[in-house]
Image (tube, rainbow, N blue to C red; front, side):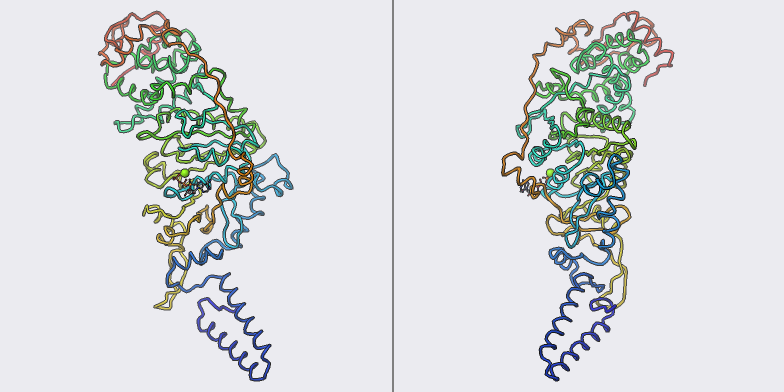
Length: 606
Ligand SMILES: Nc1ncnc2c1ncn2[C@@H]1O[C@H](COP(=O)(O)OP(=O)(O)OP(=O)(O)O)[C@@H](O)[C@H]1O
Ligand SMILES: [Mg+2]
């Protein structure tokens, strides 16, 4: 093939000279019209060819050339995704092929006619082709503030085929998607801090259901992992110990029909009644860590566990926030909600390291995902059909959901996770280096312009790979990065570099939710934002009034007890265990049995 713009410059000049010569001959022979047509044809073919096939010669200014080609919707350069590559992995055919596993309930014709049922549009590559990502692949979006992360995420949510779980720090995701999502299924908001004056539509009692030990363990783990006493020595030890105590308290509270207020009173007061409740219910094994906590002679142990628990229940100190865990009815049935393709908006803003409701958010996220996995396991293919999306905007800032753990086995269960963050530092700040690596290894990478994190830029440039380009000075071919760090940083607005699996890198034009025709129509009609109302609140009695008989002492004494140093107890005295208030108390028969179980385990403390 003739290479007008490629590496064979001599050929290119030879063909240009030949075309000029033919034109001149035609003019001499007085075929002026033919000469003009011939020249125009040659110029057109050369221009079209140059547009479609980027030059192999290194441009003088790579960044400017790349951006100019992107503005003209042309292939960005050598080494980027080609149209053939797009057809193989990002196009309609590829998506239909992949969709059999994603939507086992749909026929091939249905899947072919409705690509949105099994894939999301990540953006457009050159010549306006949609680049799609199947709903079983995760994405991590990294960008500086105000680059369009939320707008892009909202665009994905608008057309998502199944249930959606979102986290956000502002009401923007709700404002951009709730109206249209409400046409597909129910919309729920959990916004204890009342950000943007969007009311919470439900309250959720984390205690209900905890009489089932598996539920108690799951919820306790979510709470304590979210608030695991960062900065303390041996973090995982405290995390495990606090989980053990918390799961016992949650289980005991559910057995007596109480809520988090009693759990809190037990945690910071006298927890012996909780041991008795567990013992009477035949759950002595569950009470062992609680017994250790109650009778530990080591002040450090109890105070560190209390610190973790205090962080978990920080929100209980504010009556407005505490209300969100005190439902007047059954709260929200997650399984039903997911089956109805509902959209849930979890809104909170960080105060300090994380949001005061961080533990609660992590717990709800864990339960929501668990409900989806349970539902999916009963569906054909053993996965959620339609898939569920967890759109985690600003999740690193507000809510320490165990995203790395979620990512490892969600794709195959019909749960797609999109994590949005500002950069590597934010991911590492929340999930440490290992967690960050897991997130980046298991997700497709979408990097928006403006990033100044040199490590992220270096990683992205390395992942994009190298290409042979001819140097201007030496005239020889050398390996060069397909896209340099500076080129990524300087991408035009609303563009992003996509690195997906083993495919070539692609630069996408991103679609924002407010550009979507359906959103525009809804905005004109005034239905872009769903109308939501807060549930009726129930007047709550004081903990003392409702469960005084389970507190094992006056609430005032308990408050004093929680603030004083626990006294070293004689663990070898079979009849007496230390009380937080520094008093001693005779163990009642059931608690004594718990104690024996603990002793049989060879109970030891630090
Ligand atoms: N409904 C809308 N219509 C038009 N422009 C909007 C709309 N919502 C946001 N924008 C603009 O789009 C840009 C990107 O907003 P977006 O909230 O998506 O960015 P972001 O990357 O999520 O920022 P942050 O990190 O602050 O959350 C902003 O400049 C904003 O002003
Ligand atoms: Mg945002």
